[in-house]
Length: 332
Ligand code: SF4
Ligand code: MG
Image (cartoon, rainbow, N blue to C red; front, side):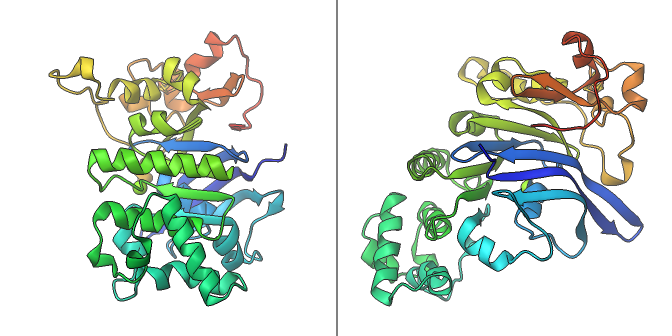
């Protein structure tokens, strides 16, 4: 089957005062129809930047400098009608619902705005559709909500409204960037559950960005692990969580809080992500890796693996008996 969305060897540069730096480096990914893919990594690893690149929402200081993107086989570039794509085919949900909502406009007006722009539905039909999608995400008393202003809602309700807004035009792909991190854990879990079931029912795809592997494990089919602007591991949630290949992924997994670890201090990976200005050729995890070898400093590891489980680490070549195949850096 044709992938829904593809990114092939995409670079994104940050233009700073003292020069341009690669903030995303050779990102290749595919999103299949009807799947939920998590993108995980510490802050500064490029997850949000990847999502902004997918939506063509990069700020003026950043720029896609290489690579290809496709939606259902069609190339996405400067010529693309992004207004149309973002209205109908791909939608994005940001972390803080208040930034997505206009405080001076009723929920109903905001929800139906994009229907007004992208469909020929009548006012009544738009209203009915808004009610339906609000119910779909578990909101009740929707007639009252429709006439309310954002500040009259709780944080959890606002986030459900934002999800409903993203769903209203029935996009094939939703990208959600840490959509529930600002919320209380219980409410977070409820919303994620609703979100997952709606996406599954609609057979739409979801890219779910989070720094929280526990949440990724809960709702995703597949996971992409990013580090310092590169994809370093990808596979099904089952494979990556039970048999992580990359030392960084192993570290992240050790850092997940569990009941059995209660009372013991949480493991964190020592060190920090190298700053943009300091990203050299070799493995970017080298300063923090307990398994580093001399070659890790100079040679960039290419991506290797099989059965849909890939990682970029020099340890992998020996483990899998793979020789230097080619360095396409592809994470299919
Ligand atoms: Fe560690 Fe080397 Fe693998 Fe990088 S390539 S993660 S430094 S072993
Ligand atoms: Mg972010």
